[in-house]
Length: 363
Image (cartoon, rainbow, N blue to C red; front, side):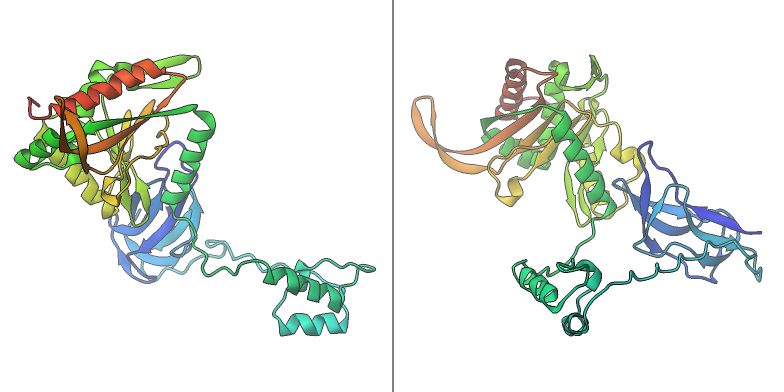
């Protein structure tokens, strides 16, 4: 009996998945429920398990191949079973080469320079001449040579689609505000938590006080979320991912810190599951560690806003009429102007600033 290993559907919008790693090779014994192949899809790396006991008789989709949902990845059979005819779709034969009319001189020149004549256009009587080949060579010299072609990972493809859709469909507005980080630095050190963890906790508090920032635009309605689920952008080798910390407002600072640390670690190891990537209501992205002062973050749909954090820089500021050196940082808030006007967005950002500058109190 032949059992097919199929590409799973891991979300409603998923169309394809990338075969990342096969854990078994053809002919290996497999056990039902045993991880057989790692697939990379929509920001989630997922292990597809064997659907039956037996032998991995055939790997249909090779590593690096993109496969549609429900497409066949491989075939499992009982030991010594021969695959019946038609069990594996034969590879399509290469299409016949297009016949090109060209002069002998044009063909010789094309061979010398490794040029595909089908890429050229004839300028005289439908027949490619040596002059046409020379013209093509001259134009090619004016085009910069490509050093490397890097195919997008599934994560990068999804990210590209999402940010493009967000920027096209959402009227972005961005405002910045400078914040004194001296007390936040002290709180971070005394509590042994990262700046991002502290910020996530304080932003979650601010969102409970400004619920419109924790909402989404839906048709002719604004839907305010009941939960505060904090997404935190994480850079990985395969691209940017945004794991989600659910009910961040209900967690203590230490719980936020440990949860975030676990999510970031698993994100960089490619071990996030679907639940880790879904249900976000607000996102934080921190580029301070890369020396960035301020930037314009793109909203993570379907959320209403995203907060960007820049680096902490010591600079002279006036405190109680005196010039002093203080650690300052820029906060950049991008928000959906269909949902939030400038004044309520500024009020929210001011509250985040206030909480950071008074970070030694409570929490």
